[in-house]
Image 1: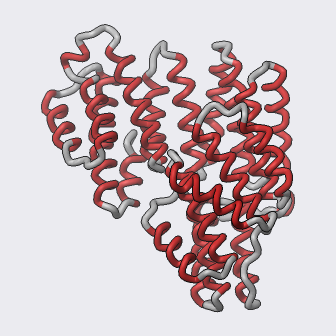
Image 2 (image 1 turned 180 degrees about the vertical axis):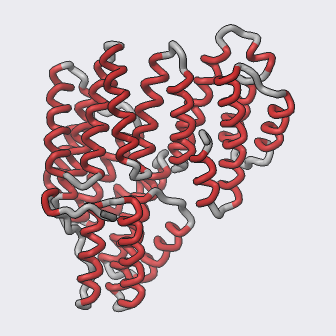
Image 3 (image 1 turned 30 degrees about the vertical axis):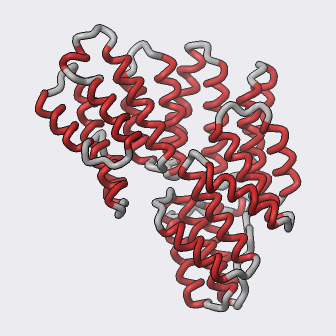
Length: 387
């Protein structure tokens, strides 16, 4: 069932506006899938899709969906290059799903693009890269690894150095996501070295962002700031710059510079284009309020975050912050519930490195303490959850 990602996302959503957007997207996706697979779409299906789109509130999403439908009509298919137009509009819609944090439907859309893009090698490779990213946000690391392996092989075949290097960074991120930070660090450094040798400065900067994240996980905030500063000038997208800012804000918190951390995180929370990074920024502001023992501000940020639909790692961070808040204000029963919720998400998605943090949080709460900021272990000490 190729639209399973849409179905999964619809089951998760409770807000009417988001549900109707994704429901309309599911109808449009099936229409586009039929057009690309069979070269035919029933006119009644087109009208039904347009009726569903009219229910969508946001103008930008409504227009994107209408462009996909218009590219699949009988009139559009009379043009010899109609698949290219449809693929282009599907890519734009996939980017919007990504920015809104709807990663399961994004996987469906990008997979359709790279399966059916024909001779359009550029869009095929870009779709694989985006699909791998979305799978990692869903903690589906084995599937992501397969996509990155395919991306690397096809990039090599087509002489695309940048995409080859991006695939290698993606494979390193899958290793990091599984909790093996040391191996991930080594693979990332190797990719950066190759990128510099090929004068691919933007890819090298991407790798530096990853090293900054790893340094943060290993409690090396000075390295986080150093890597972030080196990366910033060579980045080529707002999403990457926002990631750098979030790494820096997190490091500033660890360096006991809360005012600076709050200023940077507030900027991302207000102006960030990526829904996932806005959630990260709000979670950091929540943690800063807890650090300051400001109960009113902490409760405000917690209520803000309740309205967001989060991917697994963001959900883990959210529950960890709740556990810290409740323990800070001596509400240990509620803190324990939040820590067990965190552990349940880690076990469900096999987030091994966060599993140790959840266990440590429960241990801290049981002895009447606030959970520690980080408690990462070496890869050789990890157990595999669920075995």
